[in-house]
Image 1 (tube, one colour):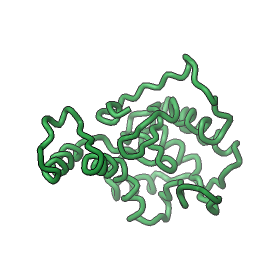
Image 2: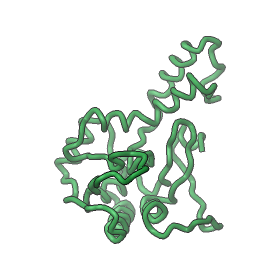
Image 3: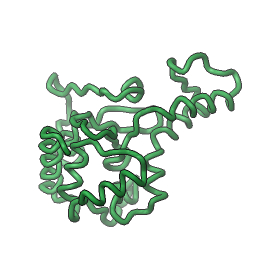
Image 4: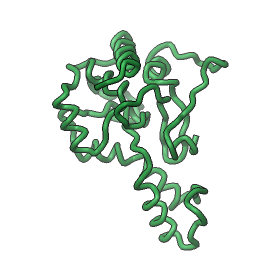
Length: 200
């Protein structure tokens, strides 16, 4: 069952995206479709993300010139399973890329092994248990987890991770609406998801 706050946030985000007129919106995912997706990929949507997709699924249009991603919206209905899996794995793979190529090392993993191959293997083992991040749009992510909502949306590019919205509704305002263009004291996101919050 989706919590009341998650339902409110997800519905508000869905209304905001629809009002932007930027994308076609398909029928929302059904309970059976959610169950199939979550079973296939081994995670549960956060309550607000679930309510957002239950209200309607954004549809990818024809890519615009210079658009970074050809299909920025995850295609949960009828999409390529290999592509969806790749997008779910991208945050962890990005960290591993930086371990291997950019000398990144997370202090809680202990001392970095001298050999690059051993460092990469230790990082891979440690990353098995980090919380799953679920793509919202392009390389913007929300943490997985039934019974949770209101997390800031994170922009994740390897270990370059920044806030992109206070929550899902605010994120869509920033990305597709009349975003603030500046920040003030009212814009104070606080990530709570373990590991990823430490990279912000």
